[in-house]
Length: 319
Image (cartoon, rainbow, N blue to C red):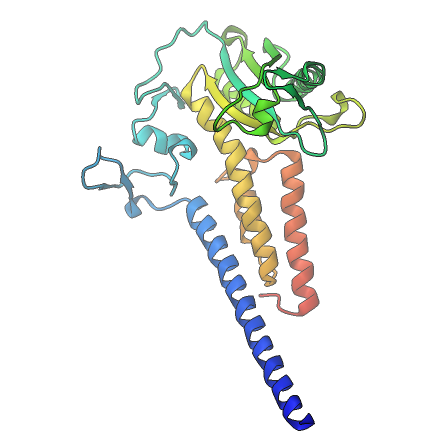
């Protein structure tokens, strides 16, 4: 009996060990595939590689235009946006909407307008009083602090000559199907603008996009928020701008760092001590580092350090 129990227990242990190793290998393969996918998405591709364009439901045609492998139109870089006819080209910059070059009045401000909802996690706790009324006082406090933080950050992103205007207004939440709890609790209307006549147009457009993105990511200066609160992350309900490329730039500033940070974390978990994601972000020619906030850059370095230490500890570092 005892001998049989021992044999059975050993078999169970062996089966458990085999299952564990199988799961471990599957997780490793998934992490490696994720890193490779992000690298292939982000690396510049050779022009002869081409990519497939949408041809109104017809058979896709290969294009030899330069650009990057991207699945989302909102993330295309300037050169590829031009090649696809999404924007026009003028003075080395990209402009316009609907595939035509921008022809707007140059006296109009460079601006972005966001309708957002603070993400009420453990940082902020704003509750809906009833079905059609929001905790207005708390929301207005967030609006005031957010406006101050945007104005403070704008001093770093724009020259003194730039006439920057920032407004943040609390507006009622939306109830009903599809509305998240955060949106129901109340929203903020955020407007950032720079007068064209006082600004370097291209740098101002990038500054507006970066400022809006840092607000969405919750990476604005925390000094402006009371009771040691930090800048809240914002759920986007809508985004509009004086130029469609500004909207695309906001998307790039939010989505690329998020994707690359996930990949960097997966690369660290692989335990080989490689840092291909960090190297890609640091590539000045590619320019992805410009999309990262200070907090995101620290997170990237932390992941790389974690991966290096893990590989040294296990002796699995690849040379």
